[in-house]
Length: 133
Image (cartoon, rainbow, N blue to C red; front, side, top):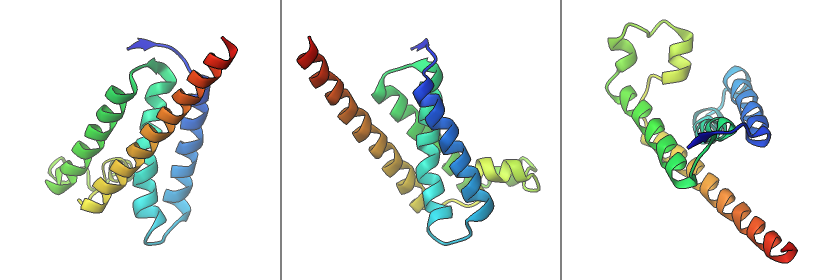
């Protein structure tokens, strides 16, 4: 891993962050807010890392997924309450308060999409390099 700013990942991270804020502030349904937000948050974290660090796809994807799982597991153990942060809107939004297996599935599907897209894009670059080289 080495520091390298990538404007495309950065732009995607900013876009996804804004979508997450819009979902949190304006969407109050039973599908997009609980599952769409979780699906997108792992993509947001991945893009944020890739915006600043040149890193391996597998290592980054697995690291982000483990991080998301750990945050979800802290919800199972009610860590936010044990730390006395249950009245903090920021802590509640970042850490969450309720463990759900569906969230784990949403994180997993989000990272699967990232891996599929990244693999597809790498294949396109390879084909393009072969044609041009």
